[in-house]
Image (tube, rainbow, N blue to C red):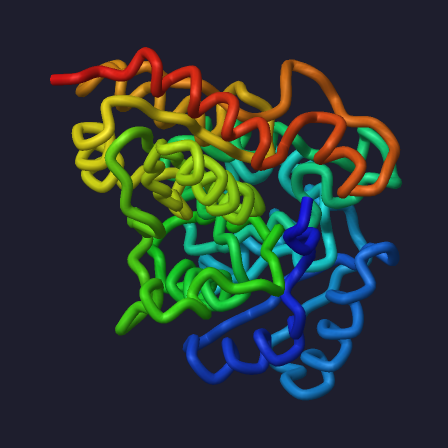
Amino acid sequence: MRHPEMKGPGDPGGLLDGLAERVERLLVVDGTFPLLSPWNGALAAFAEAHPDAYVSLDASEATVVLAAAGFALEGFRVLLGPGMPLLLSRAYDQIRNALAVPSLPVVLLGTAPGLFRGECGAVFQLVEDLALARSIPGMTVLVPSDERLFGDLLAEALRMPGPVYLRCDVSSRSVTDREEHRSSGPLPIGGGRLLREGTDVTVCCCGMMVFEALEAADVLAKQGVQAEVVECYSVKPLPEQILLASVRRTGACVVAEEHSRHGGLASAVAEVLCEKYPVPLRRVGMDDVFGQSGSARELHEYYALTHQQIVGAAAQVWALRRRS
């Protein structure tokens, strides 16, 4: 895998300072987690610079969520959990009942999703986080691939009227560094990006797998297969029109994500295509298994979350693609 490993934003401190200026009544609510050092330093600096916009609670994830709900009811725009990587799984009941049921404007950060904390083993590897978040009524689910998109979506998410789950497994490499991919303004929630045009197969992807998809498209082009790469940074709501327009051009689809094959982006795409435009589809993701100990790079190779797997899946659906 030649692309850089996923991580948190390279400068979370600068990101938080920028948010304090852009978002009215911002309040960062957090507990702390010592293994997540990039956010710990940023949070300490933010607390010193903006003491009225930061609350740290020495409490369980469930209690922190309930406190965030109270702040949201008082009119704050709450950013929840930069230092709490297991927030979604440990406080699911409170997130559902205290945030989602009353539809409060709280953004939950998934700061160590997927195989990010490989060395910590299966307990700390949330390979089902998108499925958990997607299943909650009214929850918006976002999975950006690079730092620039992460910052834009975070600012937009903090203006949403209801809860948002924002996965933080972005790369220091930016898709938008390429001139043809630059946008004139912030990309909308519910949208996606057409990163590469093609005629033979659609590769739908999010997060770290965006870079693998682009590399797979390069390999496929050398084999005479033109892959169209669509980044679905908004997993819920899904950019249905972009997706459907693409598969109508290509007649086949591969979905790639660093997540279980069940309940995440692949499931969302399959649901839409099954109802509106059925085409051959293959999923590149983790099987119905938990992770294990190892570096993130080693685990990506072990679970076949690579461009080679996307190339193989694309070849399969290309042979079966719909031609009408």
